[in-house]
Length: 151
Ligand SMILES: Nc1ncnc2c1ncn2[C@@H]1O[C@H](COP(=O)(O)OP(=O)(O)OP(=O)(O)O)[C@@H](O)[C@H]1O
Image (cartoon, rainbow, N blue to C red):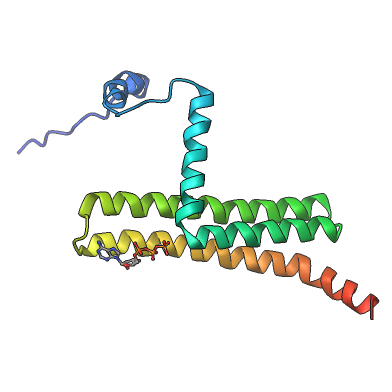
């Protein structure tokens, strides 16, 4: 029995194929400034509605401020900045996934909805634990030295 294999669309033709789908969007940002405006709206929504996002923004701000006050090296500050940014970006993705799941299943229980939400929350947790480890390794020795020298 011969099996029909579907040929993947030529990658050069993808923009042409995707364009009509994109046009089905309720609204498409027409320029860069408007794209930034919608991105900011997402950040603002998460900050207003997600307690965990507010906590992470506060903790990340403290970690970056401490790394500046304690005169960490540029590379160390960059590492703290990258890990902080990762936590916040994953929090935003977690909010996006939660919204999509709720949009799809509404208030019904679904095992796949549970998996999607639990995994998204797990990704945030993993990044937050790594950020705490990194910040602890870089900031605690400096803080300890500062406290010992002031005694
Ligand atoms: N439709 C659903 N079907 C099955 N389980 C769900 C569903 N909605 C939520 N849950 C379960 O409840 C948990 C909490 O859901 P919720 O939407 O409040 O996410 P959350 O992780 O608590 O959100 P936040 O990040 O705001 O704290 C999910 O992790 C999941 O285990």
